[in-house]
Structures are given as structure tokens and as C-alpha cells.
Length: 234
Image (cartoon, rainbow, N blue to C red):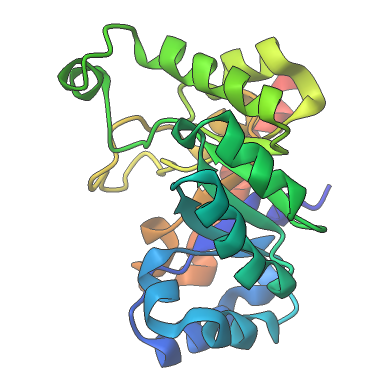
């Protein structure tokens, strides 16, 4: 089994040169790369096109969230890039998501549930008095009804989502750390192997790789962690 397909590296650099050099270094060792707002707001469509030259899948993580027509038109400006995935906040509502789905072409639309930097106290501050898992499940249901191809959730919710919604969705999991990594600003975390075991379709991993003195070695450790977990279940 080619386990590298599970690993998407988040290239959250502000330097185009560093992003290109780093992508070249790791491109054959991973399943794809994630480009977020930090990169896109500085280098835009031309920057994404430069990354496409490496021939690996691109997860364009823009977390679109606006009125339906604005999101639809924004997506039309970038959909010709044919990213593998494009994200939008499910909290933008069904109408917004449906407009996005209409123009997706070959790109898979991924609904963002609850950011991994948030927890129950944050929900309370918004006036939402339910647990993180219930909130994420409710958002996922909205995403399903709107036609999204998958969802982003923390690894703590992915097992229940897989059990509830089955194989109809792609389950993308950030908040992945090896046991000795710094959690940084993430609050709802898991190890790579545990997340895959719990039902994640792919993992988005940033600083555990990008801040490593030996990124290839770090990727190999992540893949080994996944392999160990899979083999322990068989």
C-alpha cells in the first residue's frame, strides 16, 4: 500500500522561492500539498501555477465564506487551476455551498467544519452550547445536504463522522502531530496513525514537516506511524 498518499504537506511559507524549493525537495515523498491564504494572498494564481509544475495534487485551502454569488464568482476565477480540493466554510450556509458546487468542474469541494484552533469554550463564546463533536456533526450534515465532496474536521471527530456518514465523504484531517511535536496553536490533535485508523482519508501536516531539520526523515516517520497503526489492526 502506498501510504504517502495520505500525507499532504501544508506549505505555509511567505517566500515563493522557499515554497518552490521545499516542494521540489519533498514532492516525491508525499501525496500532495496544501496552499493556504498566506501563500495565495501573496502569490495568487501565478504562484499556484508554479507549484502545479511539480505534478502533484494541490489542496487549495482558501476557506471561502461570503454571500452565495460572491463565492461562486470567486471560485470561477480559480477553478481553471483544477486544484484537487478547494475549501469553503460550511457555516456560509447551504445556498453558498450549492452555488460553489455548481461551478466546481473536476475540483472536489471540501466543507470546513470547526477549526482545530477552537474548542468548546469558543463555541460558548459564540452562544453555541453544544459539544464540539455535536457541532461538527451538524455542520457535516449541512455540507452533505449541499453536495460537498468532503469535510475538514479535527482528528477527534473523524471516527464519529465516518460512522455517521460512511464513504460518501472525503475526510480531511488537520491537527496532526507526532507524540513529541509541539502543539503550537492547535487544540484538538492526534497522531497520524490514529487519525487514519479512525477513518481519515488524508492528513494535512505542516510544521511537523516544514519546521523539521530533515523533512524527508520526518515524512518517513509519519508514514511509519501510519503503517504501524494499520498493521496493529490487521
